[in-house]
Image (cartoon, rainbow, N blue to C red; front, side):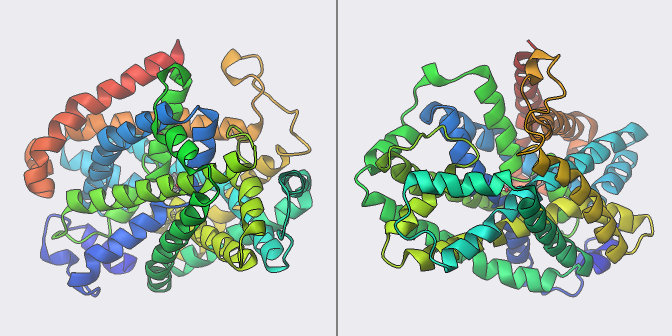
Length: 466
Ligand code: TRP
């Protein structure tokens, strides 16, 4: 699919050019699956619950939902649209589209920053995704049966304390990512994703059902949905916004790169709505599955990154058939992370590919570089946990390298890329052009990306730089 689309990319304005091999009727579905595969990942099941716990629940969730609807969704439409018009890698696309609109060459910088953000995210994403593998092994070997919260915490702590174990799993996960990316295997992946995503959904529902029996379901529902605005800080708003980008794979080229492979006759707006809704449902279900268990066992909602790795084994350990469900859960989490990590590498690989590097070499080279940077992340969990190089800035005080990568991408690079994309489509691109892509939705979308999105992002920046 990528190859045929690259041919089409030079004539992105011609409708027939994209009508190549893949059957047209299934194209929208395939795109949705690839985009949902990219969007649904650790962000939904691992990160959303723990940052919600750290930021006090309801009010944070409300801000997050608003960020998805008001900023995330219009931005996803923008990125897919720009990607489809450019028909290239995010860097190539920004060059092509800026030129077509008679704008400065410097817009390429947006593509570069997006690609860089995706690369940095991949480097630490792989480390975390690696955690799922020892958990799969523990689940199969029955280590979770009747485990209590304390032992579960110790198990997780032991994993984080061991650089060699982390390195092993990080290496395997990065290898898996490179493998798919190098092959450009959309077929195998597509087929896997279309089965795995529904399976993940059903499994989450089962877990929510189990959580409902813990007697603390109501508590979790009010924690998630009853806003207490006194718990809301400016930093929390920024976190919610950063996570809205992260969970939808925005502001990092992924959706632009996938948009380049989208046939002309597919409605961008309707497709984006489906992706955003599915992604949000998975995150909320994860919250509903996890918090009742957290409360039932007297664990702290603000536990942090270890939240699901510590709490879920406790629940599985008490459930009939828990070993089976635990295995399934962590396998699916691994797959969800895998379909996401591939999309992170895609920005860089598609760019290198354009520059004449073969797909295999580009994937191996990009993956290797991200693997190297990832090692600094895994070391900051143990050996380098006291290495907080930016202490002289109050904002970065006490942040390890891992914390810094996370902060830099989620709170600085992604909002900046998002702002620039909104300015580009809202002010620099001819409205006739965006109208041709978005049809009737244009009326609703245009004022949002022209005014609301940039202003909201400016306010957030102003708060952040206070
Ligand atoms: N959306 C994914 C998640 O929630 C993460 C992800 C995939 C991503 N591709 C991305 C994040 C590109 C940033 C950029 O886990």
